[in-house]
Length: 361
Image (cartoon, rainbow, N blue to C red):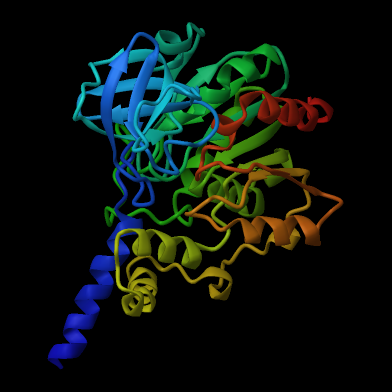
């Protein structure tokens, strides 16, 4: 009895690593780096595979946010450090000895203060209460709804907003249950898109009421899962013209195991973490009565994903694209962390996105 109870408690604790990830907080897979030095246009960080990633990222720590660019080769004076370009400091001051982590969020604030883009802050009626939404106007009747995922907030969607604005596409970027300013999930847990999709569905209804002829759903991580659920279950699914899935969580079991393992959960407890998550959230994958079967989603779909994603295994995206070559395209991104496919190569990402969106506009 005692051992069984202890196992239940341990499984519940392990499942928290995936079900209680704070919006805007680091994922368990993200290593903490130390700031060793700063200089004009440069920051020296702990040498780690994360610190060597290609591209541009936010650098976040206690009381500061900055934007770092590529690694500056030949500039490090120590084998234990990496020097990256320091593009700007958004707020605070990174100092030697500070602990920090890389985040896909380049921007902080809202589209007006961060990007200088006209926008309106809306509240859309949702299942649990008002859903906060940023609306960026455009002249086209194809709209984009951009929805963030694990470990980020809707600030993450600003990475692609200037690009979408240049295409003159109206954009809606919602917060959803559990986010700052949004309704709290009744159980306080993240359901990896299984219930959160209803908030996205409310925003889809708002878009159609407001004049959208059709909508492209662009989701990151569990936001991509929300997009898939909406495209399969919404009463307005016929208005969904396409899906853009960045680092999609296609197997919640695999993602939960990855996050729990990164939280140093012993391997023997990982099956208990999965069972605990099932009991706490009702997640049962394709075995549940309302499961989404991806082969029934027939709209054009573009996936950005890569083999270095430590949270949502790339093999599921690869299999999905191989099984549906007529409707799904896979843009493979090497060296990119979960949810950071744009960060690893913004120009290539935006060009692939332009090619996908152009026929849908």
